[in-house]
Length: 82
Image (tube, rainbow, N blue to C red; front, side, top):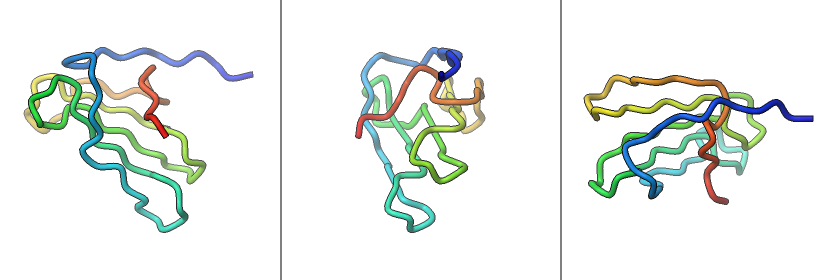
């Protein structure tokens, strides 16, 4: 059974993945950088740290200053679309 994950708030409700990258060459996406408010700037960063293809760490930069305002374990209620 999977434990419920903390849900994080982002700048908007739409998600556009600006980067979805396989950083370690295993064929699975490991890094997602997304814009949630339509301004073309990233504010949602997600990372797969154990290589299973699922988000392990989510960071949200609400003021888009390059410093995360929120960091949570898991996908923060915002799983990437395959």
